[in-house]
Length: 441
Image (tube, rainbow, N blue to C red; front, side, top):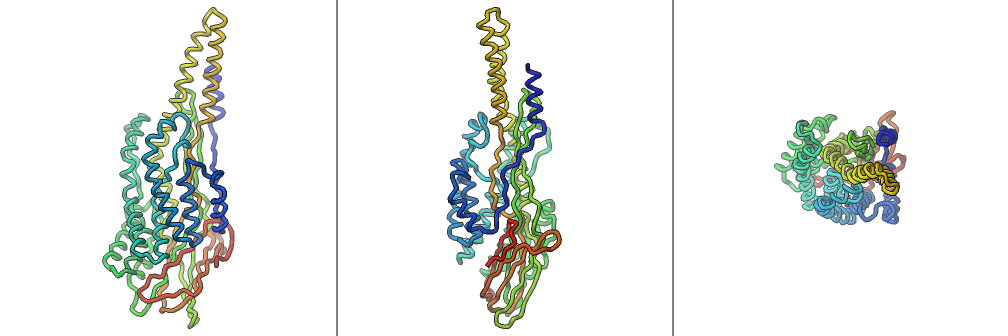
């Protein structure tokens, strides 16, 4: 009977891949936000407050409701800290069922990048000092990721008897995009030394994290932003593009106890945008300036890297959870085997019932074994930065997102009557995460 159950479980679980629901966000962010707000119970539930806050906060940012975005992301950040500590006490419950019973505390990269979007929102509200505070928090979180999971990784290796395995180290510790924003902010507030320092750290990000920054360093862009000629002004642009990674799960048999475990992993979406261009036309003179933008960050690479940091802990926990589930089944099976050998028909019958119950328990353990696939759908996979040195004046500015293959125009964002002044920061952003080809006004 045990061999039969083993074959059954193996046949069910040997090669099963389950993909999470991962629709690409549409470009109509106001419609997306409205849908999310009207369907919170169906989409999230009580254990996914952080996920809801991330989605609503990002969508509010994309719609230009910066005050609301700050409010939602600030509340979410507080919940992340609360739930990260709370998850320790909830671990026992998750051993009995699955990780979905734990309050979702966000992926590390979600926790980090929410501060970047808060920073941009503060800038658009004219609160430069607050924008700098948030970008500093962003950088501090980036640097602390490796230390956060050091103890957890050691425990995970011990639990899975992999003490001799080479340490899993986190690569991400310094964001070029964060340093670039710090450069722009400090240039705007007149702190040249801080701007130069940010430029040096930006360079360091490319040098020390080549796995994450597998594209050319935007040296010309940074130099141009540090050396704006007297009498000239600077237009700076950020473009967020492509859909973020999403989670899937794989079921596979554990070597012991005929058990199965569900392990989450991240999958990437095929990139839709390959490059972004920007042009600005002076409304008075008609002069037009054009430039291609430079990739500054792969949020996708950071997401994959930081997820890998605690994947060992997730795997070990899944193994431990199956051991807990199997323990009661093995006790029931062992007692049942002894009782079935009894000459008393009633005792033997009870033994058979216990045997069947243990088999049902194993099937039930498989049915309740599922990975935590929660993750925000509204972070971009990529960030590009651009800059134009122009005469001060009023401009119509356009950002254009082009397809990776074939160079087809995917999305156009227009900004009209933009005042560009000498010594003032003029920073514009556009986001294209979906497939629709639309003009954004």
